[in-house]
Length: 296
Image (tube, rainbow, N blue to C red; front, side):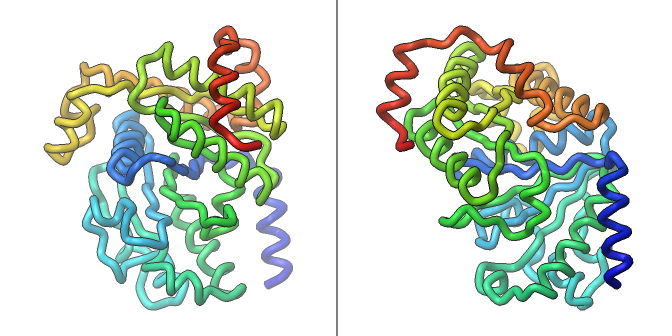
């Protein structure tokens, strides 16, 4: 078994994976977080990518509730050899499916090293069948995630232009950096117009670079759009219900960028240096305001 693990590790180092795993952390309420995850994944699928959504929450507030995923059908049950992989995958469309990692926090608390490794292998197996994997995660108070696999993936942080959201985003990035040594992550902004979102990102990025040594990458923004809310009410993705809307266009741009990076084998840490040169001009007054809101 040890030889197999070493060979598998060597293969991962030498081979650029076909799939791209995105670990998504949001500082926004569940409704907004779930909307981003579902619409982003649906857009990947619409672009012809086999896409997997994974609810990696240890509480009942993730995608499972929205997508009606059964409580007992999880990847953990596959790892425990109590059911098959096919039983825990819910097909939502031709190229889009979803699954749940675990049942609840008490079960996560009972993980041991052997079970954690088994679950990681099952997750890797599920991810290997997709082009794009979107993991809906939640960090504990100490910054830990359910699986070490999630630390190794590209980190995508979801925020808004609200002052409280900016503060929480900085605190989350700081926590992840201190816990795992992450030096880069992508940022998606909801609810703000293009220039406002870019200005908020620019100020946050410069602050994170100055005090944490972290490079942030602006992945995109989704402005407030009535079509997005209406699509949610209809239980559909905005790219399917209202393909000509601003929200649909925003998700298409975000998806295209992430797909392009996956195709080229790029990660956020490899493109951040370029984005530093292309960010909008730093607004000194906004920087002072941000400094007053966050703790370093």
